Length: 155
Image (cartoon, rainbow, N blue to C red; front, side, top):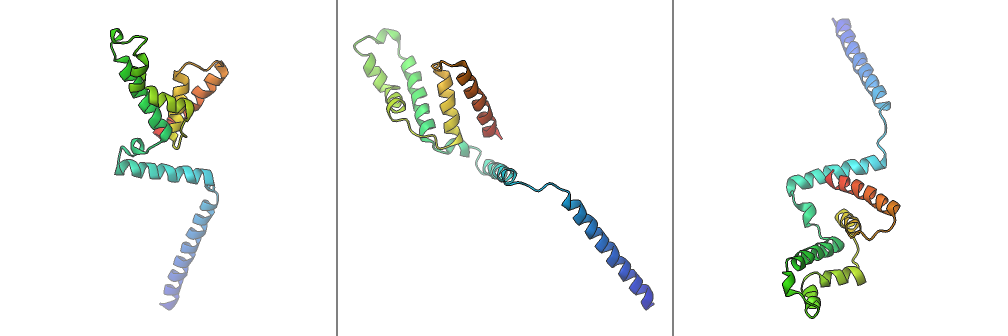
């Protein structure tokens, strides 16, 4: 009876060792995760967790450049809503300063830095929307960069 018990234990031991060795062999052929892949995976996991915690967390992150551009766009909309019969050479500057002027001056003279992906995306979008880029290749590269960054913000 002892020999049978020993045989069973040996069989279990050999099967367990063989299974472990086979499992380790299978693991050794798996690709090793590089630092870039790990960072992207962890960032995606964090982003997903943040979305579950607060769906508006990205919009709440302050970025000086994106915030200034938002102020500029809001001011431009306010200026555009002013009836044209109220504007003349004498008061136009007053209306500009009451609407988009301060944000435009900030962008012109003391442009704040982009501190987030949102800020970088909005800066490129602003540059493209102004229609002031004279080089088609420069415009195309900015469009390509913007498309990539927009995709990164979604993922």
